[in-house]
Image (cartoon, rainbow, N blue to C red; front, side, top):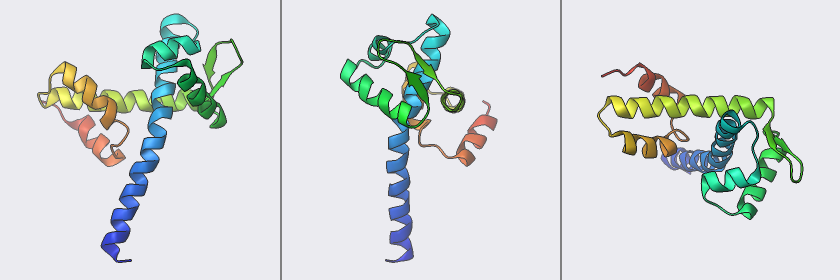
Length: 136
């Protein structure tokens, strides 16, 4: 395999891994937000937040628990572990940096909110540092 093909393969592998983590990041961020608003988080809250079925919530909640990001018992509230809280904070900070950067370059609030939701999962630390410094 050539150096160029190896680099391209590595980039695609990195993107696939980021896509797998994207759902986890979205869920811990949502759990944190709902918890701050309501005090406790139920599966139904997440289903409403994401607009998905209870079955989808259950599947993703199992993944969160397997990665030690959340804890829950049947018919009980969902809680983030310390690791889950840390990931939620990192995700929130990344989202805010990307969102503010987009606003600073003239993107509308609605579009910046929509775009930052996807970009935050795929942006490098280097790019985030530069975005954070950018002021209009």
